[in-house]
Image (cartoon, rainbow, N blue to C red):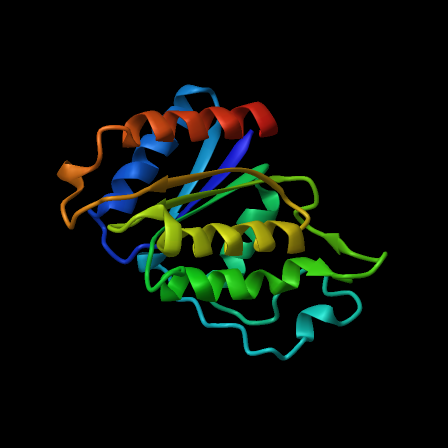
Length: 192
């Protein structure tokens, strides 16, 4: 199984990078092909709401040409995708949000009997790190993820939310590693 692990955090050595590194390692150890990308290294324009992706014959492709175009192709080719990010103002960081907005091209007919998606039935997971608690803080990003999965007709296989983080990855909470293994298992079980 091919798993796309997307790191939407801007810090190359931050908490999200450490957690996603564990996750990628666990998935690779389980025999899965891992395609890991750090959005800090990518140039991604935001969706411009041109609806060019909804024209006949576009095949669930965004018409913008940048690194996001390649990433969307890799997401479509994957059996599972992990959206990984630190929590920024109750939401995804800017580059991850731009990529998620571009995922608009991956589905059509939302809210109708014609609803279809390039990710129909594929696994989608969330991995978030944040300094605050879950309630009144990270619960909103989990809700956003669940709605994104529904829009994309993807199978929401699990949410990993590591709360109480500090600026230093060496200080991750003790249960973070176990939670990461559990998410890897959920992805493997569903998409394997």
